[in-house]
Image (cartoon, rainbow, N blue to C red; front, side, top):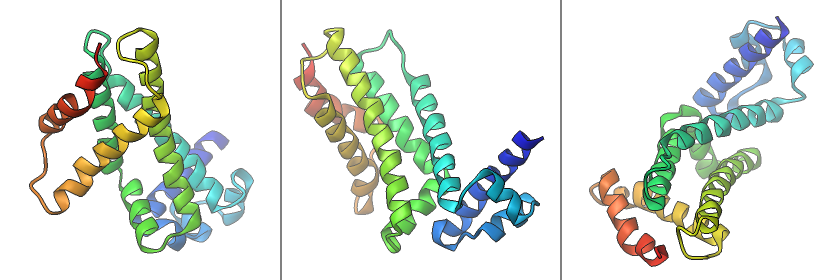
Length: 190
């Protein structure tokens, strides 16, 4: 029963953060949405920052699982990296919470939200870095600095998916894959 109550609290917090953002969400709101007393929330969580942190950790796990599911050992490294990166960014776009947090970071600059976005982005970087390290060990790609390469790949994907389409026609998934193949991966291939 306590596990279910904890899940209900997390769901209510997720909903509230998704609708109102971190700054505007209160423990009272979460308690009302979860249909529990405010004290019950404090039984499980110290504060709303801890609530958001657990939600972000769960989101990261789900995002990494979704990215892992796109990987196919029979496909080339570059196709797998493209699929994983695209899926992780797509995952972020599919979740109202991440959209709301990015807006709050941009508009208000709430430090807790900035830290949570950083945590989310760092998990994406580490995921891709791990795939690069594995490819280097398997001698599939040239040796490079996996941390730098992961950073470059992610930032370029973000730029081509989000920044590019602010003033231009959006690029398709295939166009992005071709751009990366031409400008990045051909330079890594053996």
